[in-house]
Amino acid sequence: MTNAKQYDVLVIGSGAAGLTLALQLAGKASIAVLSKGDLHNGSTWLAQGGIAAVLDAKDDIQQHFADTMTAGAELSIPEAVEHTVSEGPKAINWLIEQGVPFTREGDHYHLTQEGGHSHRRIIHASDATGKAVQETLIQRAREAEGIEFYEYHIAVDLITRKKLDLSGNRCIGAYVLNHRTGKIEAFRAKFVVLATGGASKAYLYTSNHDGTTGDGIAMAWRAGCRVANMEFNQFHPTCLYHPTAKSFLITEAVRGEGGHLLLPDGTRFMHRFDPREELAPRDIVARSIDHEMKRLGCDCVYLDISHKPASFILEHFPTIHERCLEYGIDITRDPIPVVPAAHYTCGGVVTNQQAHTDIPGLYAIGETAFTGLHGANRLASNSLLECVVYGQTAASDIAALLGTLNQVDDESIPDWDESLVTDSDEDVIISHNWDELRRFMWDYVGIVRTSKRLKRAQHRITLLQQEIAEYYSNYKISRDLVELRNLATVAELIVLSAMQRKESRGLHYTKDFPESGPELADTILAPINYPWKEALRQARD
Image (cartoon, rainbow, N blue to C red; front, side, top):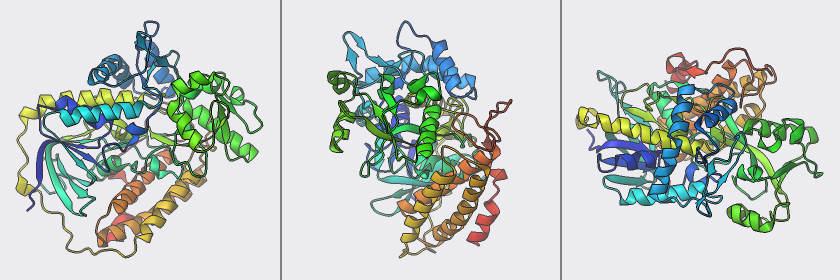
């Protein structure tokens, strides 16, 4: 039997959602926070634009609610939207209290506007908001009582009582790979929180960091949780296009502050697709760019803000200016070459409004979760807001339950069994499968889809899953293998969800069903109906 590490709360993920929850519980519970790399990695760190909240007297909660519902193609759950936007101002005030250095303009905070918003309501820290939030929360968490960090630790699978053939199902911990030592350890906790981010690394081109591999979604699915709306993958319209630039996002605020999208000949085109032009929601802008690139056979389009004063550009977009200069692009004079890239997972693990999943003791927050906030398309800058609001909501729920639950018996968690596996000399298989998966997901399950493309993707995923299952059963675990396994699982869920939606709505556009249907319905998948389980079982036997 194992000597499992014991905590009240195990937080898997160290971004804005996970750190918010940990800080809310600091001093009330013992908390372990896992990070796949160092604490400065992750989607929060890369976020540029800002956080949406009603902070101006001319704005109001109902308008933020309406904008969110419109962007979500009316598929957002009203209760989730109401909760998030209502708690928004309080969440921002909490971040300010933590010391986040939001940009000021005179005696007030500067607010910008982004696509889909009817008012200026995006509070930001220049054009590096995520970095400012992450740095601040890390500093506060390091100072806080009862929070321990485990960097370079990646969760492999959740531990549930059902999986251990015990009565009364509950999540009681996780098996975790120490990436530095190669050893797998057990962490046990009264409460486990999934805050691992999204799954945009399932696509070849993405604005996300390398670790965005859908780990929390995949683990929750394997443990028996439902997932929802996985077909809604947001493609950010404007990522820097350059041979050596990797995943560098050009914030939506550039368009919000007057940037123009241009064809290679210098003409604007968004007016042909939407009356809001560059301020249309992301799905419309990304699809418009994709259409023009395919129509013209060009590699990219251009985003130009050089008509604004250089002083304005340098004040508002110093990070983008500095990074583009590294590639010989001076945004005060030159248009920026841009392409769409996978950016955000609007679906995820089904939760209620207290962030509970289907398994007692297991919570999901941030991009990992399906709260219902985003519907068929996330409104710009609602993501970090959701992280803070639901991080606080889940923390309040856990705090109220802490005294009602005894610790899990250590002897109920067995050691991770590596007795039948060996070291692999075929890691090239992982690399090849990773590349193949991301390429066919981009080609077949991207911005524009067809039923035929989805079937092709489904067939390839089934074959990959069989190879991965065989590899997983025979070789020692590595981070690359864990991430590939999770990506393949999430890719399956995306394809299966897309195949079930017989309409085009929000981020899901299919040529076979180009119009939106009359009924509003979420795509909810339950593991009990999983169609490929038998194939995987046969592959393992």
